[in-house]
Image 1 (tube, rainbow, N blue to C red):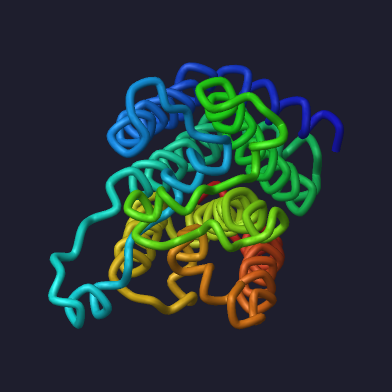
Image 2: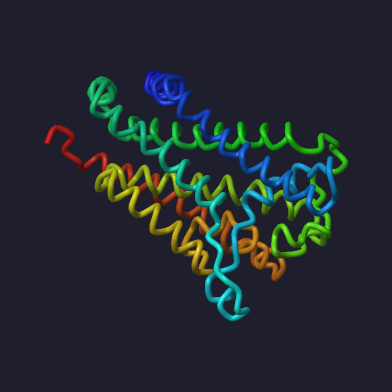
Length: 271
């Protein structure tokens, strides 16, 4: 098992740094745009807190039906979609390529398909944590470094988010700006990983794209990517049902990992 983990960390992370570093660059661009809009509200030299910047990236949009009822144009959440799709690209770029190269030899040597699959699951979890750790570092560097203001969201920024987030507690802000985005990314990545081996990479990418588009347009948490949108999860926080999306996301992670064990046991890798 250690050999599998070392191989995936070396080949799946060590050799993928070029691609992975693009992710914090995307986050950095979002941060600069957020800073520019903050200056429009507060004046030149204004600085957002960590949570205010993160909220801008993961704010998302109101569902299409809500925008239509309010007679407002539906805005595509460009920043949010960019983060979701590039994450999917990173997850999809390694496992199948590895299987066509050294991975099949590793699978034969370990004599355990389930251990090999577990290695890929652990790789996926590690990659998501690393990507979001780098993203968090970028957000921290360009934001107000004061720990006192780190989890503060000012009411004057309601136009930036299309909602007043100032009334939420520190714990609720951490939940919406950190926990939900990371947990959603883990769930979607494990689903994608499973679909890549159960079907193929094209189907997996198509499924992720479908869920992202559905999550942007519709309010249902069953479109899992929408669980990383603050404008969607805030309603669960407000009505005390935040456990629903949390359980759904955790169940998606567990079911995807378990289903993958069954799939790799039955799949003919030499066909």
